[in-house]
Length: 223
Image 1 (tube, helix red, strand yellow):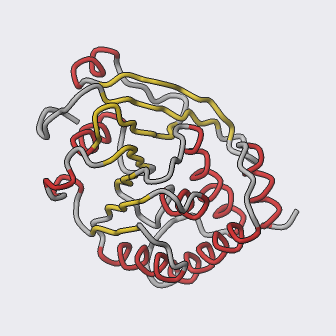
Image 2 (cartoon, helix red, strand yellow):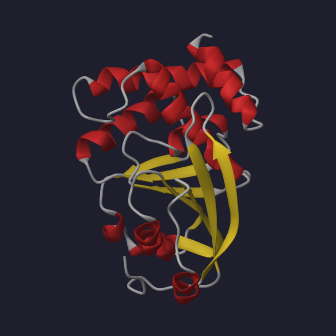
């Protein structure tokens, strides 16, 4: 099976019908990732097939956690090489994404991909999440974070920027959890947990969907 067919078939298993143009754009992204990865350490995953599956398809699995409506504002914390936010944007250009990545070289790569693919409503902020401007408080409908930290830390970092009734979507291994007491304390509920196996692997994942119940000021949380 070719890499393009691998991507298309894997996406179909999530209920995503990729167009030829979307597949082309994703492979431009993957090619640039491989090129830049020779100069700066963007990701430890370097084999082409692993990039397609463990980065591309894993990113698309986040679509099980939210509906990408036109105008939806998504914040991605600790974006690294751009997963999951850039694949989500490529497949659903109608959403607006903001990527927060404090490592300057990685942020430069993210801007390069945005320019190369001519993505609109896509911004990169090269700072730490806890140094993000107060103007972003309560500004986002959805927050994602892939390799940033454990769930408590992600909730701590992200919830101040999430609108009331907004959702935070995380993909985690089956052993990671969070206590009901902690959820109540910080004012969120688990709206959904979706189990899946990453296509063409034995890797089991759970998509966690947390819903924010109210306005929570920064500084409320503990990691």
